[in-house]
Length: 481
Image (cartoon, rainbow, N blue to C red; front, side, top):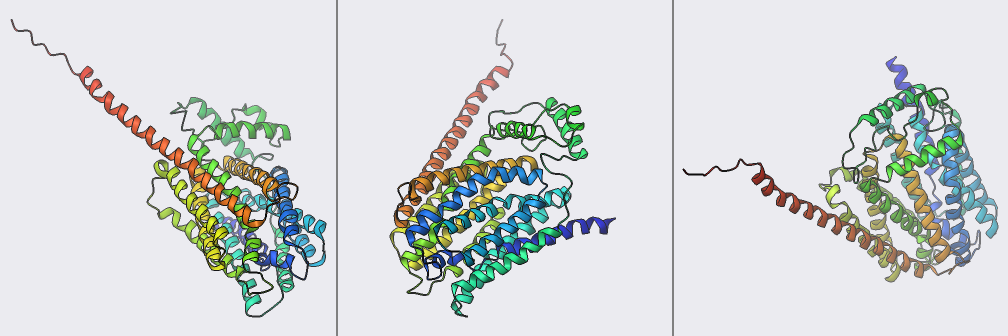
């Protein structure tokens, strides 16, 4: 029985790791802009930056919520197959087709693949027991970072050492995507999901959690919500037990009620706000940094080292994420001020990339920027997830990502898209630097307000203490006869 249980964990985890590694092994990705603007595609910088790249942002935003629901309704595996298919289509198009419209369609398929990441990161929870969640999550997330770093390094070595053409990097990437395409087909099909398909055990646990929540005394409702309990919805047991397969309207209502419940928690709201704001700016920087590098050091005139930079930034970011658990910081008290300082560091990095226009300083600033974001997003993930059950985890991170994409879409329409201002890449990065500076100021004010509130609370406690002592002491009977 024990061996059978271990195999039920090892087999899907191994397949997911194979899929995660090869789907992220993309040697062509650090040189994507150089490839589009080179002789193979012969597109201009304006066409690439202002017309083609925005299509990914729009596609990702539009597809995220439908894919989120489809992932749960279809029980994960079909969406993983769809993601693998989308990646193959993306790189076949990158290899074979030409023109702006074709590249915009390519970005749509890549947006579909990106939106389907939710299936990769949530599938494992439907086929293994909760006791294995932490371990298998670590495996799956680590292997994607390793695949990304390995892909960037292979691309740079093939370009610098083997002197291959950029076209050959696309072929290697397509080959890796084809290998990844095979893995999802052999994954076991889950029999349950978070929202649409509930197991009888989950319904029982949820009903017990709901009944317990009704009896629990609320404590400090303004700043603390017991988000790690199952009390999201108080639904009669009979209605759930009779039908484990729920309808769309029912699921949407439950999601909305859970949304309102979660975001009443002030600490969660603060970390989620930073998540959404910073992720929006981070996406913009990493999406458009290659055109910036291309302007500073054109690939047709000089040898470029984008692959080394992406590899180093990914590995340092992963290391920073690992070190988070060892940082001696009281996040509950100093979290906002730490976010302020490190957001300011990210702003400085963007300003350095934009204004000094030295490729080595630009590379170095990008590495620091990306590592800082990965460190902070890991802290934010931990702070949010620490008090969330798995169901709310999916909802909150989905909402945070959606808000980030909504903000990114607005920023793209106004700043990047040719239908908007259509600014050049240097002006764009000046705006992104200011954007992170504004984030820093927001959390500076939030941090100062929290410290002032804490100090005021302590003073009130100290002021009340003598009065309580005096009123509680027995009266002095000093009458002398």
